[in-house]
Picture 1 (spheres, helix red, strand yellow):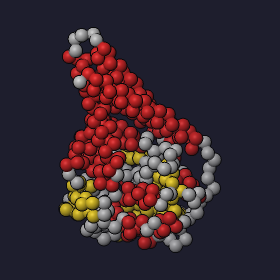
Picture 2 (cartoon, rainbow, N blue to C red):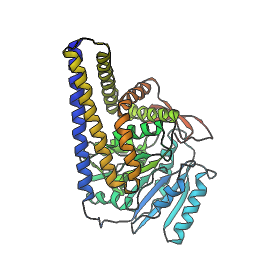
Picture 3 (cartoon, helix red, strand yellow):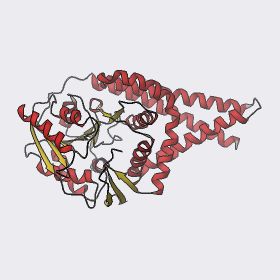
Picture 4 (cartoon, rainbow, N blue to C red):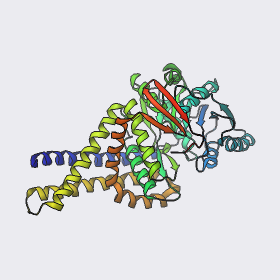
Amino acid sequence: MTIVFYILAAALIFLSFKSFRGGIIYLNYFKLELSKPRSAYTPLVTVIAPCKGLDGGLMENLAVLLKQDYPNYEVIFVVDDEADEAVAAIKAVSGRAAAGAKQTRLVTAPKATDSSQKVQNLREAVQYVSEKSKAVVFVDSDARPNENWLRNLVAPLQDEKIGAATGYRWFFSTIPTFASEILSIWNASIASALGPNIKTNFCWGGSMAIRRDIFEKLDIREKWGGTLSDDFVVTQAMNEANLAIYFVPQALTASIENCNSTGLLEFTTRQMKIARVYASKLWLMSLFGSGLFSLVLGWSLFIMIFTRNNDLIMWAAISTLMLVSFFSIGKSGLRIKAAKLVFQEHKEDLNRQFWTHSMLWLLVPPLFFYNSVMALLSQKMTWRGITYKMISRNKTQVLRTDAKQPRF
C-alpha cells in the first residue's frame, strides 16, 4: 500500500503543477487580449436574451444590454409566458431603449415538451433575427456584462476560421456566505479551463456569439431540437466542423447571486449531470481527477495524524500536502489576478475572494467528486422550476413544472 500511495501522490503533485502552470498561461492570455487595440469590426448583430422569473438584479442585467458601446445591434428578449415576472422588467428597459432608438423585441416561446425551456426559447427567438444581422449573440438573464462586452465578443468573428466566440461567468454575492464562496471557487476552476487553445475551448451559452452564416450552415437550430444544453450542442457542432472557439476574457460576465447549501449542491450537481450526457470525457476527468485529489489528500492527512514513526512515508505525506497546497493556492491567486483585469468595478469583492479562494480550495475537489458520482446515479434535474430527465443527447423529457421557479 505504501508504493500505491507514493505513485498516487506523485500523480497528484504532477497534475497540481500542471494546473498551476495553466494558471500562469491563463493570466498571460488575459494580459495579451486586453492589450489589443479596440476593434473596429461592428456589423449588425442580434442579441438574444432568454428570461424566466426574477433573477436578482434583473433590471440592471437587462439594462446594460441596451447600453452597449456598439453602433448597430438589436436585442430580442424571449419568455415562455406573457405573465412571467420578467416581462415587466423587459418592458421597462425596452421603453427606455426605444427613447434611445435601440431596437428591441419581446418574443413568447411555446412551452417546452421535449427539450429544456431555455433551448425552446432560443429556437423560437432565432426565427426573429434580422435578415441583415451578421452574428447572433446569446446572453443569460443572470449575467451582467460590461458596456464593452458586445464589441469585444463579436470582434473575433471577423476571422472566418472562427465559428464562435465565448466568455464565461464569475460568481459574486451581495451577501457572502460559505455556500456562495464555495460556488465561486467551483465555478472559477471551470472558467480557467478556457484560454488560448482555440481547439479545446468550449462555448458558454450565457455569453456566446456565432457568425450568422455558420449558425445556419451548421443548422444549429435543428441540432438544438430535443436537447437540454444549448452550449454543449454548439461546442460539439463547432468541433465537428473543425471551427475554432475563441475565448474572450473581456466577455467574462459577473453573475451576482446569493445561494445557500441546498442551492450550491443542486446547481453544481446539475452542471455535472449535463456534462455526463453531453461531454462524457469531461465528466470522467472530473470524476477521476477529483477522486484522486480527495483520496490522496485524505490519505496524507491520515498518515500525518496516525503515523507515529518519523519515517519516509510521513515526510512523503507532508510534502504532498505542502506541494499540492502551494500549487492550488497559487492557481487561485492567478485566477483572481486575471479576473481583476476585467472586473474593475468588483475589485473589493475579488480582494475578499482572494482569501476565501485561498482558504476554501481544499473543499472543492470533494464537491466535484460528489457532483460526478451523483451524475452517475441520476439523469433527472430541476432547472428554473422545471424538472427534466435527459434520456440522451437528443431526447429530453419534461417531467413537471413548479410555479415557484427557483434560481438554482
